[in-house]
Length: 236
Image (cartoon, rainbow, N blue to C red):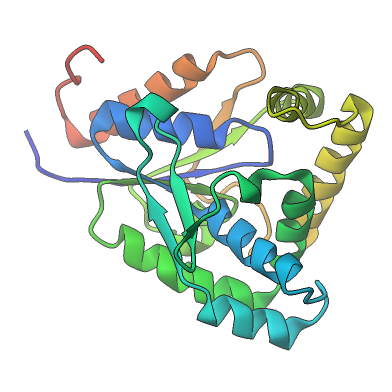
């Protein structure tokens, strides 16, 4: 048996189930889960609060460089959801609004902001034993990750998943509007000049359209165990 602790990179479009899969994979393997998208959301939230326009590149870069973003494991009773602290404030819920989501996708196209946050992400995963998810983890942040996954699903399924998330939070949002926002986000992510959303070289393609979250997570965990020759974790 080897003591190798992998960097597992999970990329994919919005609503593909990356966060759910990554959290569960980390639980199955005893790894640390890192939601890189939360970093961009935190920067976007701070920009919205301080009324910095999304096209004010230099101000957004300075804001990203000065922001203190801490990602901490969530409590089991809260579903293991990663806690996000921005300058010491718990903003786990605040960064999940539709407004912040749209702002984050605009912040994420700014090269300087990405450079600052990618450096933080690399530091966080340098020792291995992490499951990191986002949109450029396998292609930019950790191109040498031992296991790279490109997780996707149909537009309609992804929109419905995102719509249900907002419904559960009590957000009044239309399904048709959610679908259009999903497609707009896809266009922005795939078309951005720096770190566009692509399937990284060597990434395993997983279509979760007809899969349950647990199936996705166990498939990824199985692939990881094949690489490390680890014994399956005891019943979880």
